[in-house]
Structures are given as C-alpha cells and as structure tokens.
Image (spheres, rainbow, N blue to C red):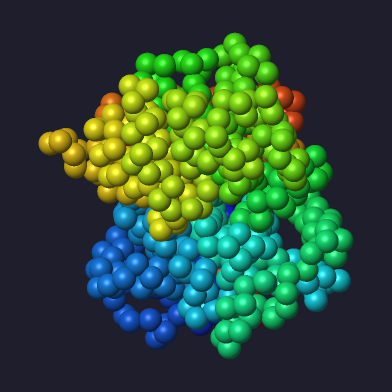
Length: 575
C-alpha cells in the first residue's frame, strides 16, 4: 500500500513526494513514474541510473510526443486502449494529455467509447486497476479493501455491471465505468488520482455472450439476486464504513429498479449518491433552466414528457419538480406537469405493477378519456404528444429513433421553441440525432444530448449541440463534499449544483445551453463552492466562510505536474 507524504517547500510551489520505492519498482508505479522526466539528481538518488535513456525531458515534451503517437491510432477503441495504457504507466502524463486536449479526449475515456470498452473488457485487459469483489469472496470484503494500492481514499465509484449505459448486463466488464468515472473526477474536478478507488462487485452475469466467451474474466455464474444479493451489498457497505468511514461512495450503472432501492437504503447511512439518478437529473435541470431562459418561458408554463420511467427519468422529474416548487408552484401543481412513459406506454393508475419509484408521477385514470380509441394498456408517445402539446420532451429510454419526424413536428406545431433532449447513451441508442431534430423543427428546437455530437449545419447556420454530460456536475459535487467533509449528500446540494451550472451557462455568450467543456475545471470549482455552502447551510458540514471554502477547494484541486521525488529516510538507510 502506497503512502504519499507530500510537503510544501517554503517559498516553492512544487510538491515533494517521499517514497520508499526505487529502481524498477518506482518506474512500474504509475502514480509516481515520471519516465524520461526524472532529473539527473533523482535518477541517482532513486537508483534509476541506466534504467532510462540518458536525455532528461520535460512534461511538455512528453505530452507532445505521446499526442503524436496517439494520432497514429485509427479507431476510437484503439485510442481508448492507448490512453488506458498510458494511464497505467504514467498518471501525470495521462491527465496532462487529457487536460490539454479535453474536448477530444473525454469521449474516448468515457462516453461513448467506454461502452465498447466495457463490452470488450476481457479482451483488452492489461494491468490491474481498482478492486474486484466477487460474491464467492463475500466473507473477505474487508481484507480485499485493505489490498488497495493507496492508503487514503476520498471517493469510491462502485458498480455491479448490470446496466452499463444502454448496453445492459456486462458483468465484470462493467469495471470500465468506475475507472472512467474516476478519471473524470480527476480530469474535471481535480481530485487527486491517488485518492480514488474503482470497485466492481461481481455477482455474476445473465449475459450468455459473456459466460460463453472463453476469454471472459468475471465470475461465470448467473446473477445472484434476492436476499443473497441484499446481504452481499449490506456486507459491502458495512466494510466500506469500517475501512473508509469518511469516504464518498458513488453508485453507478446498477439496474433501474435496484439503483433507487440502494440509494434509499443507504443514503442516511453514509455519504453516498447515485450519479445515474442525481447527477443526470442535476445537469438536465441546469440545461432546462438555460433552455427556458433562451425560450423566454417560465417554470409554471412547462409541460414535460419523459420517454423512459427508470431511475434516471424519475430522478430528472423529481429535481425539475423541486425547481418548479422553488419558483412558486405547489407540489401537486408541479408534479401534474409531467407525463412519464415506459415500454408499455403512459404510466397511469389504471395499470398494474406500477413501481414504487414511479408513484409520484402516475397520471390519474380519469385522464384516459383524453385518448379516445387508444389502448389504455399502451398509450404511446405519439398519442401523448398529440394530447399534451409538451414544451419539453426528454428521452432516457435507451431506445433509438423514438423521436420520429411525425412526433417532433406535432410538438413543434404547438411550441415556438421546443426543448428536446435525447439523453440515452451511447450514441447508437439516442432517441434522435440533433441533425434530425433541427430539421424536423426548421431550426427552432433547443437540443441537448447525452452523447457528444458535432455542430449541425442547417439553413446556412451552425447549431452547436450541448451535451448533457454528467461530468458538468458530479466532479464539482465530489470536490465540494471532500472540501467541507460533508457527512451526507442531499438533494439540496444537487439543486445548488444545477443553479450554479445554469448561472455559468448564462454568462457564456453563444453557448449551446451549457458551457463549453473547455471550461469544465472552472465549472467544477464554482459548483464545489456552491455545494459546500449548501452542505453547511443544511447542517451536514462544519461552518466555513465562502472565502475559506474557496481556498480549500483550490487546495484540493490537483493539477497534473511532476513533483520532486525523494527517497524516504528509512528506505535510504536500507540501501
């Protein structure tokens, strides 16, 4: 286990890291390896003489060299593999490269490319990163947690791989999601990579393609469910609380029903949140606030149709309803402005098997008379749009091509600036492309997507496409939580993040609903301060002034640069 002893040299901004590692062990440690950038003095002290080419280079030189090598890679998957290999040998260089080319690199280390990487995880696996905790090892969770590489951990991202993006059950391949998510915590929010830990809970898989694949690296067993699964998760949470009593635990890509259950079960036991539910909702609400500002409409005038009724969709509905309530609507009035559809159509009280997390947005049976001739067991999107005339249409269904020309043109016939957000990931699962939506509405639609899309050229104009990327929110939330040492994560903290993100977007002239990704570090810093102050206001963090909090946030934001590395005294004496 690595223990990083980082001191500030008086009068010098550069960090000093003391380590017991030397020689080839040091070069094989990505958190400490500087490659050819080790200085002559460091090479001598750290027993690196002869292990590296003699010419010492700078970090800037290395970035130029690896970027040139990166450009030789042809496919997105090749580029993803190259970047992950770079991370596995030199983390500072990896993050500096990403930071210098953030808009080009983010889609390669996370969505949409991470989906394909999860599908092929067993084929492209190179070096260990994070922890795999499989169900057969359920009695040894604490021991496994103590096998981590680094001692102090601020943030854990955990998945069981059951619902990876729109690709379904990927089993152990789901580990690509926590790895990628934590890369964004560092890239966008400045969380030091040595203080993050990705975890995959391997409870088997029901994906026959994975089980029958001779190269599959996960536990070859059907998924554990029911009480066995619940006890396993309980044991995991208890172990996390024992080993990391102050950690921020983020749940990621659990099944739609299970995601809500886990959040409700554990949200008051430790500092935790679910990014699929709360992060997605927060960035979507920020984008909707910006869209309403651009369309000149108010909360009380919105009619929102959501295609998709899983945890993400209901999370969006709840947070947007809360925003409406903050702007003067009653809870009843706010919730009445939402129509939610699942695979069986409109969710209404006359249907059986309504899920608990959907109950707040179930339409009344009496409304079925508004759909004459429609099958009450399946009132589809076309019928709902024709009846409701929504101002906002959001897709979180994971089903491609659902926002057809007929449906969108019907919506646009009754709304001057229709707001249409096809948010499903990856790109292949999006409900409609931005080019289609701009075409269907003759350039009037306000569009944000879940995956990145190039600007749309239409009618002699260029329409930039906002990406409702969770990375606008969760890194800043994590940074704020860490900076104030918040005991819990609350809905109010995500609302603070939404409001701050929308405020920043309003100050970016010509921005497509959300700020450009090139501003992501400034965005994360501002959100961290807003979230930290909200945590203090809600009494879940110790009091701190805005000025003190801003200074703490700045101190916690790591920038990828090479520290001076020194051999710890005890190690030097042993040589």
